[in-house]
Amino acid sequence: MSDSNITDFINLSTFILLGIPGLEEAHVWLSIPFCTMYIIAILGNFTILFIVKRELSLHVPMYYFLCMLAATDLVLSTSIMPKTLSIFWFNSREIGFNACFTQLFFLHCFTVVESGIFVAMALDRYVAICDPLRHSTILTNRMVAKIGLAVVLRGVMLVLPCPLLARQWPYCRTNIIAHSYCKNIAVVSLACADSRVSNYYCLSVILFVVSLDMFFITVSYIQILRAIFSLPTKDARLKTFGTCSTHLFAILAFYIPDVLSSIMHRLHDNVPQHVPILISNVHLVVPPMLHPIIYGVRAKEIRGRLLRSFMHKRN
Figure 1 (cartoon, rainbow, N blue to C red):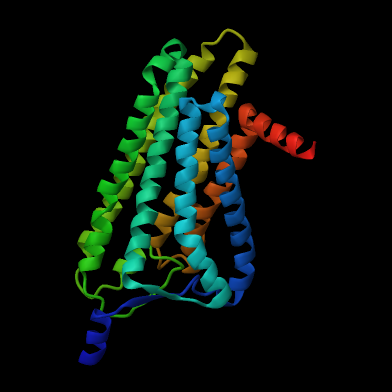
Figure 2 (cartoon, helix red, strand yellow):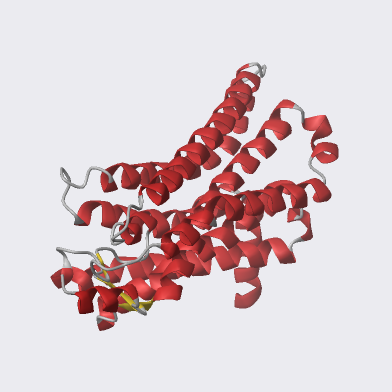
């Protein structure tokens, strides 16, 4: 590579996102399901926030955590989908240097935040089922606010070094990112310096967050299951387990695609390039779409409030 080209790339002001390499001809068709899921996610999560705000009976820890989840889902899906759809529809592939690292930060930060919210929701279910008489005294509004703040601060402190490290490397190979958004591993791979520090740190954060959070969630649900199986009647056991099944399904919908995507990005020699990129996009739009549906269908309070709103409009 000539010195002039190296200088150009070191002083680059934009990156070029390829979208989903290998599936360029299908971009327009791929945009249909992704746009549909994004619209459902936006409408569903705003509906959750609106209903919980308006319904005073829902001002309890479980629904406060649900609102945190809805807000996080809105940030996660909106951090990538508008740009991804502009690539699919208008071939608008350029993204500013600073905008790319800002997207990288919000994407990874709120992924960590969402994982922490699932731990908080597991804690809420644990206290509600295993120690119901003390639930209102343990999970006060003040405590819920502290948990929410701690979850956000953890995400910021753990993830902030990722864009700061990535931004310091010289980028002289190319400015083309083989992805539909600025994912850390895809951006750092373009650096012409030894960027293993970035890769090792961000991989360590993923492993630390997933393993720690899954440990706390698993411990919580082991205790919850023990409490459920000690209930005297089958109906009571089924009813109590039903309140937890929603949360378990949401956890699986969030963690499984995330883990698969991280594994496949590191096995890129054995996996077609478009597969992990598709899974990454699915991971950031499908759970935000599913969460309002899952919780809206399972939570009779939310379902009842929606039905009353529709009946009021029809009358």
